[in-house]
Length: 308
Image 1 (cartoon, rainbow, N blue to C red):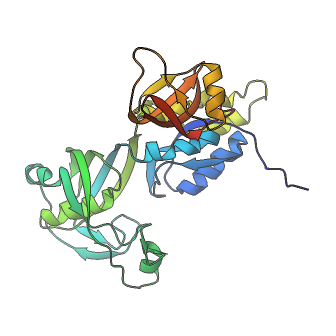
Image 2 (cartoon, rainbow, N blue to C red; image 1 turned 60 degrees about the horizontal axis):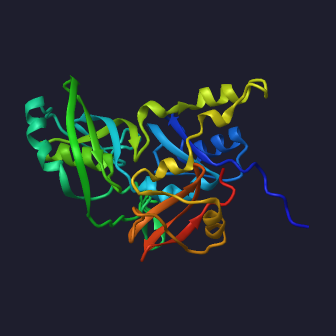
Image 3 (cartoon, rainbow, N blue to C red; image 1 turned 135 degrees about the vertical axis):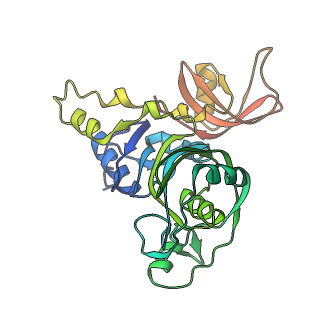
């Protein structure tokens, strides 16, 4: 007898305002339980010491995670000057110190060096793999961690305040693979001092904005209301929200039926595209498939049957 899968078929995005101290995997588990969802995942890990935007995908939304992960991210963070740590944040041991404290003018002068396409060496305590092992596992075991620098994109980086001589606050908008801890470390070194991230908050991921976030406390309060009032679906964002950056096409129900069976369809109409690297199609405002267009035909790659 086949084992019945636990949970319900719930599809959509939960834009969690992750609290400090909770790991991303733990956060996904809590949200999955609160929604009684059969399937869940997240788009972009946040360290336990970081707070803010953690997009959690439920059901068919898990198939659109790559579109969100590849999007731009915005962070607000604080650098503590004068101390370098083993983890490049406040969780690690202090490994170097400096008496130099940069002022706002000095900080602003070096920011252009960290904007655009730059080379960055990832932190030793990161989830990157070296010969099949996580870098942070090797670092915790006291083994050498040899990571190669890689190019990242920093679209914007600005100093937002200097609350005291030991701290400075920043905002940045950056591309996939950027480590804010490494950015803080490298800025400190460029200023002739040491430094680490003492606070980090993510405020935007891809198409998802800070104003859309919801806290774990609010979700828990909703979950424990009277079942007639606990409308958990009201805080879900549609699966296709993750696809804002690719073209959308509307098809008929008959055409959707062909796509659900994995068949390509000929796009009709005067404005129908001839070729597109990526697009998604809907019928009656329901997501049907993600795919590409070639020679006027939509070719499905991911199909979302019963996503509505």
